[in-house]
Length: 192
Image (cartoon, rainbow, N blue to C red; front, side, top):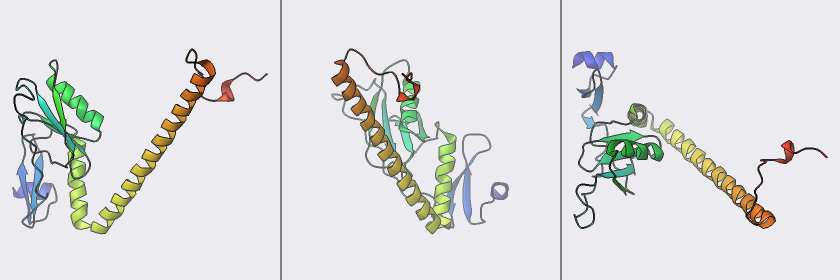
């Protein structure tokens, strides 16, 4: 255990434990305090009259950092992901070729089994926890910057969606749904 502390530069009061992947360790506690707050539990599987037990059920939600969590209700598979689409792709791969059911959760829930998803996301989450403990003002500022960036992206997406809707309405009005404009701008139209 001392070799792990030296190798990964943890303080003497840090507690680490080996994880199933070769050469990996998980930070469990620093100065006797757990590294993560108590997580919300995943809900129970619905009754048999609502969902047959032969259909795999996956829970998809975000954790406290905003990363996407996908986990099988039977705790056989689960992972952390940057995007919701990646979590859905993971569910499809895990349940192929059969079907599956998805339960989307509103509350943040932490992954309670080994991460089979994006390893970078797990490392990023541990880094966020470390920065929040060691430099809370920097973490708060970074969180504010990320929140503003997300707002800006949402506003830009809404503006682009509005422009597409206006263009489609103009095409319907001009061409009565039989034709559509293929040029993105008038720059590539011939000059007369």
